[in-house]
Amino acid sequence: MDFNAHDLSMGMKYTIDEKFFSMWNPNMAYVLGFWYADGSIYPSARGSYISITSVDRFIIENIKHWLKSSHTIRIENNSIWRNGKPRFILRIGNKALYRDLLKLGVFPRKSLKVRMPLIPPNCLKDFVRGNFDGDGCVYLCRSKGKKQDLIIRKLSTIFTSGSELFLRDLLRVLRGQIDLRLDTVYKSKRCFQLRFGTSDSIKLFKFMYEDTLPEFFFMRKFERYEEYFRLRPQRIDKEVETILRWVRAGRVAKKQTRRSAKPLYMGANPITASGEVAGVGS
View 1 (tube, rainbow, N blue to C red):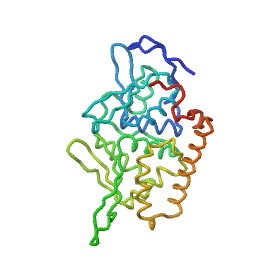
View 2 (view 1 turned 120 degrees about the horizontal axis):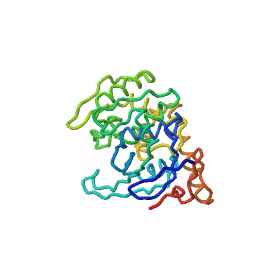
View 3 (view 1 turned 135 degrees about the horizontal axis):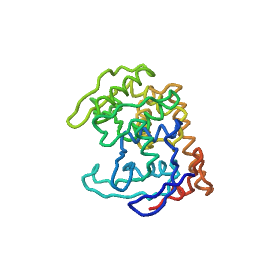
View 4 (view 1 turned 30 degrees about the vertical axis):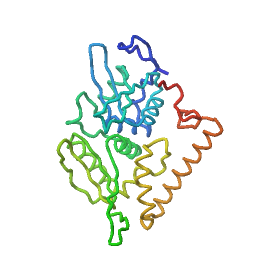
């Protein structure tokens, strides 16, 4: 394990994997995709810093663990932040990680100008899923039928960014991998969006979640897709069924692991039986 020289804001030394972003692998690609959505880097008089934020603590804990970081996750309560939800912030002072993120296309005040990096084909779905978990959403369009029954009109998957160029890059790369109908980047009041309809959303679901365990994505977003397939079972084909079974098996294994008080193995990173990442502070 590599040691950070020191985080000057705290005057302390922290452990960190300084080579995390130096080599492509699925974990690194997922974290990079998330960083493109909800992360930042910035220089200061005290050093070079990288920071990542989410309203979902589980994701931040996992990222901290994959980075082999001993830094503290900070909790910030702000009533204007996403409906008043607290956000969890991992802030790291490290020149090597900062330089590697610069090489990968992340730069200070990136939100309006960032472009998608060149990604190895075997890591593309992980980068896309990470970016979706950071700045994407999925929702069901519902309405009442003639008999007042609830009808699912549409499944929609949305990617959001302040950078139109990033979304154009993302759409181009996705269309090179998947037969998608969408060919437009939409402009809203404060950002740009890719808005995928039902057929495209199902294809994206297959692309992002195939052979992926629950520890490697935002479960609440996956559950929205699950809800759609529960309400529209005629849209379940063999690929969808395999993914749903795979994730359900992962959930069962996780519950059994917690009951037996043995760590759940996520690559090289154990999670304790309580579901807390080992070594994570409050």
